[in-house]
Length: 277
Image (cartoon, rainbow, N blue to C red; front, side, top):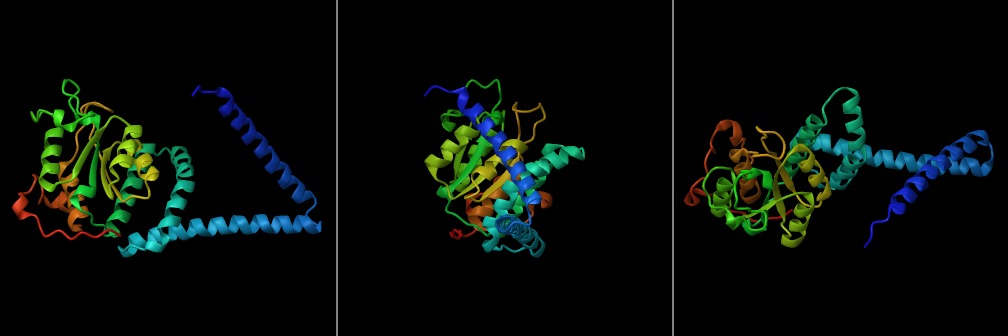
């Protein structure tokens, strides 16, 4: 299908006239505010604004209460998502105004999202858990591309892919390496996981978590010692902690305790309890 520029230009013009229309409506309502039907319209607009504001406040309040009390509040999930989707772009603008980097704000969002997911106590079967990683984890000089087939990896140990495969084999979960957000969404639609452990940078994790907010996602930031999208690394301890949370509902802070630095023996794995909430 040919891409037509007039679609974008037409919607931009329509948006502009919509703003002009709202401004004229506001002016008219202020000027003729004593007219009976103007009062009705002002009342309806006020009620609508208050209702939306109340729902956003309900979502934010529920999120704060859930984190503060360290317990899940399922009834506010929908409104928390709505509040985040509505307010996050504004938060980015405010962050820039105060000199806070977007990556710092997005890292904070990912931590909050992870905390809310962990509070939900989601457990899934291994075959329904997906580890989703970026292709930049693979050594750039490696000739064996793994984005189409992970088994092309020769497991030489020069990059984290070898450890990822070892971990997924140990726990029986799915591993998918993708070259971008479009491929990630395609893989999720095809494999239909019930939970995801995603590895990516701040930008991709933030947009991905918001795009698939119908699924529980634990996000793990990749390390970028050579800059963006080049020979990136991942904290395997934290990755394994996320996997074990979804399989066994384990919430221990193993990252700091150093309990997990290598993949555990399969015989040492605890009894798995499968439950999806």
